[in-house]
Every structure is written in C-alpha cells, then in structure tokens.
Image (cartoon, rainbow, N blue to C red; front, side):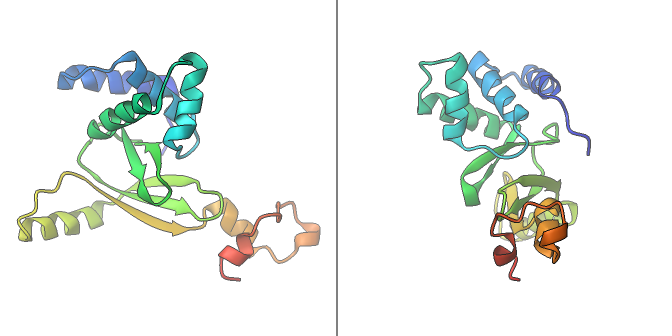
Length: 172
C-alpha cells in the first residue's frame, strides 16, 4: 500500500468531514497533520509536545479532544498495548477491522485490513446480539528490519546495528 502524504491525508479527512456534516477544526486538523508526518504510532503526550510548537498554550485536553474526534471519525486508531495512536491508511471505510502489527523491539506499528477475521467477528457479534462499532486486533512480534537483525549470526561482518536487545526479545 502506497503511503499518502500528510497534505493528502488531511484533504481526504476534510472532504469526508464535509460529507458527514462534522467540523474539522484547525486544532483537529493540526493533530491529524502531525500524526500523518509520523512514520508510525505516536503517544498523546508526544503529540502535545509537537502541537506546542505551533500552539504554545495547548494542554492535554486539547489533544485528547482532537484524538477522540479523529477516532470517532475513523481517521486514526488507538494502539492499546502501548497507548499510542496511528493514522488509518483507509479511513474512507470507517467500520473495518484492523490488525495492528506492533514490533516489540522498535515499537513500529503497521496496520493491515483483516477481511477474513472481520467476517468472523461480525458473525460472533450478531450471534451474541452485540452491536459492533469497531474492532482492532493487535499482534506483537518483530518488524522486517528487527527480524532481520535478530536472525543475523555474523555480527562482525554485517551492517546491522546489534546494539539493541533484539535477539533476546526474539527468543534466541
């Protein structure tokens, strides 16, 4: 999946807000823009630090209100295991099941659409009489880069940065 530029993400979100009849305030837009500039997930307090560059008076409730709105609209997802947030790469479909692949070494987060799993969850929810609003599945392991480092057995002659505890965390 090709990664969108922050300006594209913001434009698409603003367009969807107009269609949905909800208001994308300047602060909400700025929080989404800041998140879109990140390569992965970001915590609310890291977002607050970035927001304070343009809005020095910003307080935690400012960020949390923006995050609540962005979550409600399906523009972002919360990664519960590390209490962070990530931009949804396909938020034009707000009611989808996402699989968050969380790297236990570098904390990167990659979202994938869980089509087959989504069907099972919807079926189970219907059988239980449960009104499903959204679902996010988190899976932990190692990203491609960290897995490559963990698998490397030739530290003296390779180009990897072996300074982290990757091998220990990978169970080697």
